[in-house]
Image (cartoon, rainbow, N blue to C red; front, side, top):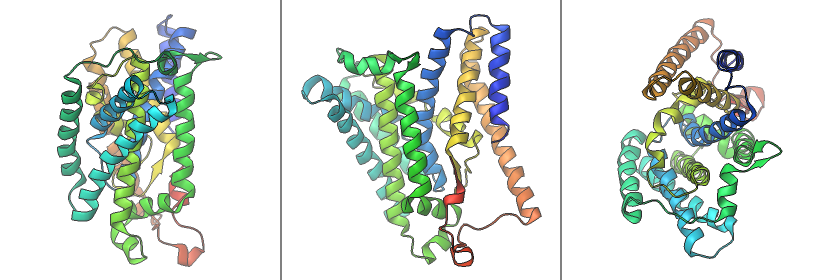
Length: 329
């Protein structure tokens, strides 16, 4: 993760020097808004990766949760924050469905979430008849396009989400259990960690975060689009893995995920400014993910050779609460 901050600075400086329009207040606000959405999407994947799993259905849950909130805004007459709650509950239910199948029956998270992704997408498209939900309240749209002192409101919302997720994973017992399960599933169960409950909980959390990302994305678009999550998958894996979250589980870095999202945002913006085809964004994102995976493998190999790869379950030897040192904030 150490290289990420200099990489972001160098890329930002290079684009600013070579593309005069890049270094402007308007573009800076657009970058922050895009970064906020990328981070919001990545958080939902990050927590599942830390447990040793994955969530292929992240985008479809985001679409379904966002649509549920939009529908509530149009028809329920509830305050806006309760409309948000409707979407988050839908995301939680979708995540619980995934977690139940993975935890209760021991099914592969890849298979379960791949199948549920198709289900949730079909539900979202069927309920809306593939038509966007229009006429959303101005107070909602203002969250997606408004500013506070030059800073996008969207960015402020996501920054608060980052702080909450980082604190939850670092300082709660459940967060440490997620990391224990991802680091060594067998040993974690020997010390009394309930695998089924943890897996269900982490998928529930991922569903809530996915729905939150969907709600914010629809606020930015100004309408409820049923297909918003179709291009989330690669980016949701890219930012956490680039940021140092171990794909095998057991360690995550919230700050690294944010920096990884920043790098992806700059790459996407750079492709637009140099007038390359949009497909190059996916090519570059995929290349960065592969390089990050190779670096992770090399880093683990060095740690093993040096004898510095410590087990998570060392509370009996050190007296420390386990797992807190495995979360970088």
